[in-house]
Image 1 (cartoon, rainbow, N blue to C red):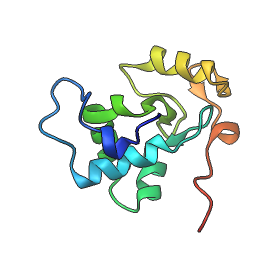
Image 2: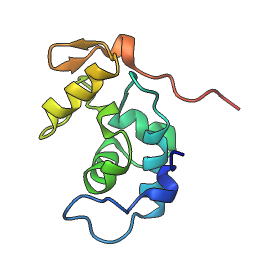
Image 3: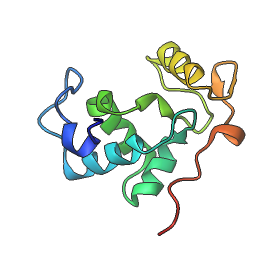
Image 4: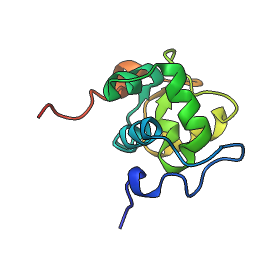
Length: 118
């Protein structure tokens, strides 16, 4: 059974992470965990989806706690995965069938519209 980010976040945090994830971090991790395989959101899209923070704050959360969720499905506004995990992210995205253009995701085809409205 797959554990949700809200239950498992913080167990496998990256080195340098200080303390357990905050409520905001859990919100970001939950949003990232919902992105379907082969689809992506930008850092700013995740911030918009959560209704809080900015692309930069989303990036900070993922750098500290992102190993708990499919972090490779969050990319820069250019479609390029963030360094220093560029190669790993591109490999994982390609394995999921995500449309790529060189070292970037084809955002027109791969960007997720988000969860259905209630």
